[in-house]
Image (cartoon, rainbow, N blue to C red):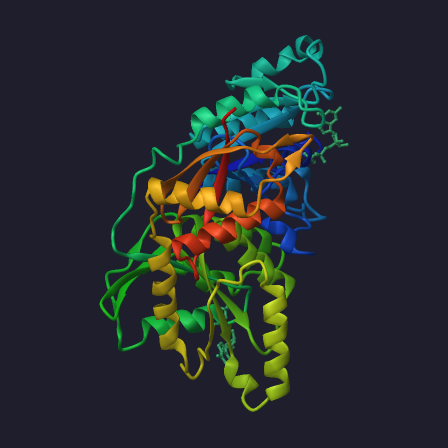
Length: 438
Ligand code: GDP
Ligand code: GDP
């Protein structure tokens, strides 16, 4: 199951970040465990509406100091057009229609992607009249909203929901192949691992299919299991990109993630774990992909027991947000341990496919709720009605509750841990969606 990507596009200062913050506010609180990693977020999960999606704030892409605004906007929109399923085009109703807005509108029209146009900073209904000049953009639907105060957001979100595929409607993909993506910052050894895997005598590479979009997926077989390595072109290329385009890499890894079942996050055991490593792993966790952590360059820690122990401690504390992710120590250079990576990927994938029937699920829920009652919120008890697994890959359970927004992080975590136990998930994530029923 892939999660759709929605991008917020518009010239600087129209309120993109403000809208992003408003929509991702009640975001999946798994992030609470990722201190220091969530600053400068470019993307966030929006799960408080009927259909979950990933929101990208293209405003987070810093303009290079020596380039004009127009160039920056141009670059953002190109990325957004390539990667997003839906574009939220934001303009500034307080400032009025700008020539740059019309330019953006032209580009968006040519992209043939669904676009929802929004005039922002309409802080009250009376201001709508003054903003009617924005109809000249020729993009419909056109919404008048206030990202800062919330006006018009609900109506706008109805259109967003209508345009996105729903979790339940999505085609079940039950082919036997495991789609894997290799993530990691430059120089950790992704290409070396890729070559070691694909060059291994136990791996049989099928025909390599390239597309015009500059992504190459590599299908192969290992121990009788079919795999597809996602976007291997990106792996080879991102190792060499110059700084600055790094954030474009975030966009790309998001898209690769959405197409993958399992993310293999490669770390450099010698250099240690950095914030960027955690950000990538956090992306995989937030996307509910399976996660396997590879500690590469283990050869460089040979005999260094102190360093090994320190790394182990750091790993345990830094990866508290994904305690279920298996860790594999390898050397892509000497190939030691490389053959242990795919078997771990396969184990994670097997759990990723798990299902639980509605009867046993609701029985388990009764016990879980009785063991630790939902907390009171403003004098009212949270009430859970019914649970149902609506998808696998990742296992996704919808919980109907009287007030989804009032289900706090700690209780979400409690439910998640308990239900993971019930389903026998030890290496794969579980996604819970809270839906309102009064
Ligand atoms: P970005 O550059 O497009 O990400 O824009 P920001 O989100 O940083 O917002 C630019 C400025 O517009 C900030 O000072 C915001 O406080 C302000 N702003 C954003 N949304 C609204 C709104 O709905 N109403 C008003 N009055 N101001 C807003
Ligand atoms: P990428 O940018 O993540 O694709 O990283 P590369 O695969 O290009 O590797 C970056 C550098 O690390 C190269 O010089 C590799 O030879 C080296 N390297 C990769 N894996 C290992 C390893 O397991 N041990 C050691 N010592 N060096 C490695």
